[in-house]
Length: 261
Length: 97
Figure 1 (cartoon, rainbow over the protein chains, first blue to last red):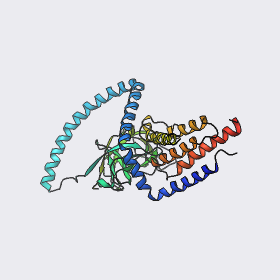
Figure 2: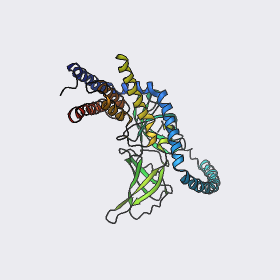
Figure 3: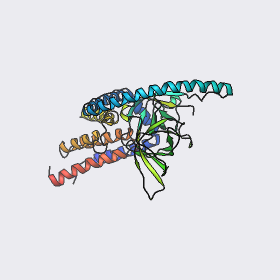
Figure 4: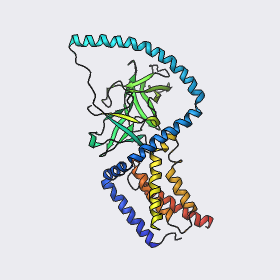
């Protein structure tokens, strides 16, 4: 059963040898192709977002109307709360000055654009790398201060950012009011669960989850997501809840990398 | 002939770019709705039995897919080369094309 000539087999094995040897210089090879592809990938990423947005809008028009109405009500409540918080902020600043406490640490941020998603894992590629001072492990957030992930691998002009929904990511998290602590673990496919939550603690749907700085993985109080559904069992000492990430993966365009943590 | 190979190489590269930068927005399972894999399957299915362009396309596509994934370089080259070989073997043995 011969499909290919002997010459083709020789070519195939020589090609394989060259391909596998490229793994020795894989960062340089990948960086070369990423730099070459940036302009086209940027256009494709934006086109993809626009296309998905168009089809999503058509299929979700009814749901969007209901969401819109709910959000308008919530905006009113938040505006009222905002004015209270502004006043508290002013009082806080005055107290800090009178007690001689320094200002909160200022983060140094580097802005980058998302140009592609890793096809088989929860990670994205951004267009900044070691040439712009990025290092592995740096937290990554959106301009709205929503936690996205951390820098995994740094190339010269690009970096791979692993999302918090990636199976290899886990970090300390808590509810916004600080009453419940747990460990947020990525489950892959943009899913996160909050685990090791004591069974007696009550978590309601839509409770906001933020980072805790206990483990030192991410800075504290970055928005992670909200509770979707819980899993309580009488036999297990802890409960786990599913969290809906606050970021939308297909709407990621600009990201901020915290470089001075 | 060389022009055809360059065209295939460029097509493989462009399909890999679409898979990495356009396709993720559509939220389709990348193992089933993989543009590159579909291209390899179709080219190998409709090419004549003794043709080698399908196999070349599989190698080129595998290389570019490896560049845009976290696997080591060579993983998708082997997978797609295997798929190409399997399709040709299937057509020869069972369909007798």
